[in-house]
Image (cartoon, rainbow, N blue to C red; front, side):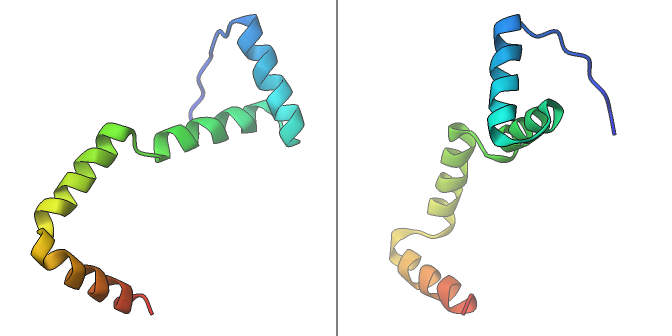
Length: 75
């Protein structure tokens, strides 16, 4: 595991400590979890690109059939 030394503004440090305390977790765990969620969730630009790729892959005339196939494969 890697380590990073951060210098945080006092106000941010207090806010993070308060949130970690409310969540019932150590500050370090709260920060790692928060950063993980930010990195794991694609930004709006990435979501738009993925959506446009899907639109190009499944033109309107084929989209309904593709959706039905996908849903039936999950059953």
